Image 1 (cartoon, rainbow, N blue to C red):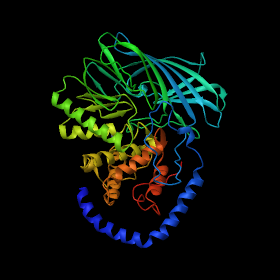
Image 2: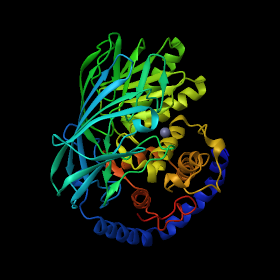
Image 3: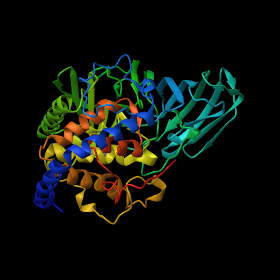
Image 4: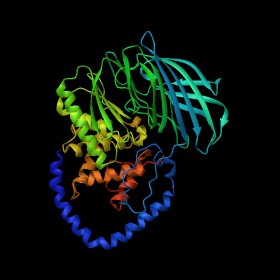
Length: 477
Ligand SMILES: [Zn+2]
């Protein structure tokens, strides 16, 4: 259904609402202040741990649009930093060594570590040695889950060092094309610890629940190959070996390629690079223009993109996948291409900086990104034909959706509901003002569905949950 039909219906409702609001304004104001105060008491002061990292760029001026509201992000008790190495070998497989420093910032003692090992799902993985503080250690590998048994309990505040050597071949979990190897989630990633190890994986999910971490990557490739990554300081073409760093990002995405060329566009301090094999000039121009306009808009209206590089890697057979600092885009007709580029780049804000657990709350990045995409482009999402208002709620664990259900529940329904809501507001900028406030309050932290509901209710001073009732279930976990 087109959003325009809703706009006409809702205009009438909106006028009635304004009249009611004027009549009851004084009464509701005093009540809503009480509501906000009680929210503050509930939340306490939990934001310090998730504050903006020291190396992040200066924030947009803090808004005071919800007086007294204290964000309550989802806290993680496991911190990691990664020192990775990646070496291309004769048979075009990769030998990798991951040195992971894991710190227990929970209040529990740990008897194991849990890590995602996604290459075990999508390629030929051969494990080498696994050392804990330089000693061999028992581990088990079950699908995407690598469990390392700790010989001694790791108490709160303690740190341990894990070294994992392995070899991956034919790794094409997300994308592969000619002389290009798309290495998404190619290294062991420490799971989050939220009252217990939180490691869930579903093939419909693009991502694992990881925390913001610092990375160093040393790489050695065959001559003629080069690397594009999440790091903001990739070399410009050439450079078959080197070291890269990336601080405070969710994952270290890597593309190893030979023969791809790039074109650049500078927006503010960010160099947008569009990569591809023999991309038609008109396609390259469309992507550059779309990405540049979008970046300027988001910088101004939502919050600044903080990195000096943004890579868009295109391929005929690529999936459209977002990663911090880099996205992959499958080449399609120009009208769909624009939506894909906008959607994947908006994920830099909603996924890359405002994170969520994709197993439980994937709609928070997919649905909000779809909403921002269609609002920005002022057109319906091309996914709208999946709309089924009788479909399952948007915040079920991924295992509860059939393969043909999650697009409707995670992408389409949230976009539809949010668009309906914001179409009622008199100012067509309300949606992005709301997203700006949401971004400012939760950047570099993880949000849950209940927290988003709490935020939206406080922002719009909603009196009850009726807006959410038909598409969000109240879950406690
Ligand atoms: Zn998406």
